[in-house]
Image 1 (spheres, protein in one colour):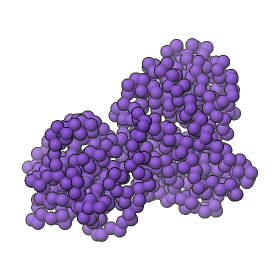
Image 2 (cartoon, protein in one colour):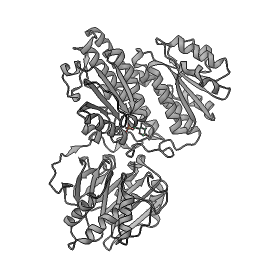
Image 3 (tube, protein in one colour):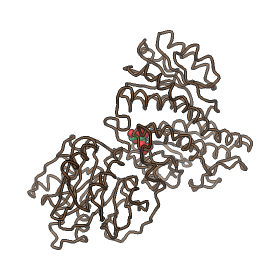
Image 4 (cartoon, protein in one colour):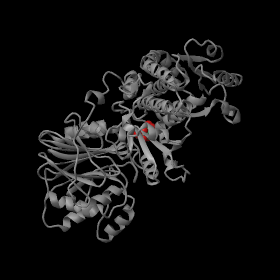
Length: 615
Ligand code: G6P
């Protein structure tokens, strides 16, 4: 939520900043701004709306400088106005600051500063932080990089909350200072240039050498180098990592939207999620990142899976997968509930948290709460080096590559693949035979080609989407492994089309939902030929008997769905526990095409942000 970029080097900062900021637009997009040091002072541009508005403004009224910071906002404190857009300034107007996070005690701090004669122009918590740092700096006589860091330290010790910040000061040109607590901040190390950003994706045009900063670390950078210290003032060790992806991976290519590009990447991402992790000779999965021996895994009595949004839906599928293959009881819980719930968790419980970004505030808090209670926590993350990935005791990366469309697609199927590997591994330790394990591996190996086959249905799904795009309400129904897929299908439609979509276990229809059925309310049934196919068929009949239109997603070769449903989409056959990977793709495409048909901003739906780093 909110994205920040800083650039210091030999190039013109505004261009580098805008290029980086566009890569972070998924983090928030209600207003944007930048500040540069142009030799005689600060130059500032701010605009309400998308980053394109800021770009237009900078083209019309250019600013210059080789040091600068910028920000794209997802409003938390204060409405969407130019005044509330970042950067914010201190009392002297010489310090400009951008911030991602929430300063929880900003009202107290603001009141104290007001008594001290400070006036504020915005309603934001960020402006309070800028004043606080500026006041500390003004108390110091010497105007140097070291003093700026010292002032920051003094200010941050008064602050409660989360922050990823970057700021510049007129009196110390050619320097950017950054700090983090709870919000991500990555340092990019270039040649005669250095960068700072919320996500490495913003920097890949300049460098792939990065340092993922840790909480309570402060970085001071200029064109020649950087120093990382702790909030206490000690030197901090760091590791330079290489970003796995390139510029090509963060561009749209020939696709009209990131969402469509990412849906179409799934044959590769599904393969990458299992690459090097299948061990046919042992009939199991190898997941070294879990950092657990088979003996330790054998002792697991219970599993808790947690996450938010799409990641939670993936966890719900994981619950069915692990219970089916490994016979271990699993509970899946919203991270936002788990963090405050006093869940009685027995001793030998293993906790999995799932997060594409690895930065979601509620998921991180749930993870920390479980660790505090002494449980071993494992992560399933996509974003390498993210906070959740780092704070876990072990985990499995998805290797899906950057996901930029706000509506998650490819990360979801990667999460399903990873959990199927976890289920296989646990199953093989508990009771699955070698040949059963081997069969599962053979089925997993077929999945990328099956996914590619589902994508061939794109044109047909686009036609179906056109037919139903004007619906006011849509219902999604599924059972067992595919009940979470119904939830995910409804979420995709809500997120991208703003249609009121709700999802239910098919049999729950009779307990209320059926009252919504009429000729204008389509029901989407996820009905593969599995153990509950006949039951799903009866539920479809119940809808048809009330004249409700039905779109059914089923299994190739099936001819019974066509007899009852209005529109049928058939995907390749797979074992029951793998059907969700194939069933969700038509739903992603359906949501995408409905959104396009309605003229929605598919990649940046209103009010949403891809990475929710506030509670
Ligand atoms: C936001 C996004 C969703 C995502 C959820 C969890 O709400 O808009 O698409 O599923 O956060 O994100 P995570 O990065 O933790 O998977």
